Image 1 (cartoon, rainbow, N blue to C red):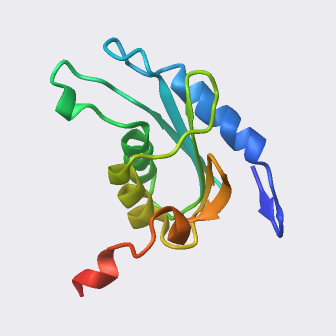
Image 2: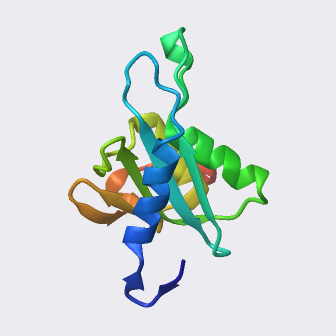
Length: 133
């Protein structure tokens, strides 16, 4: 998957998210979620939601994606999309927006329900590592 200038294959990234959603473990809600992102070194990482009988400890798809990012060598996310089991683009929850900010920063591009936006619009006035210095 490549990103050159103004061209980026969002459809291929969405397909990776859709494939990830097929692996979701969602026996309670039956709401499958998949997420995929491009890393600054060209890799694509993905994740799916994993529910738990103790609802509060369920893992969002973005959690799995970020875990994969770090397990496979780290880097910075540059492009991101999240879909439901029907392949519809959905918004990351608040916790996951913070995860995305931490691992992609303000310039991360996110395909949202209202188009592609930088993280500065998806999570305005974000708190991050620079605030801890």
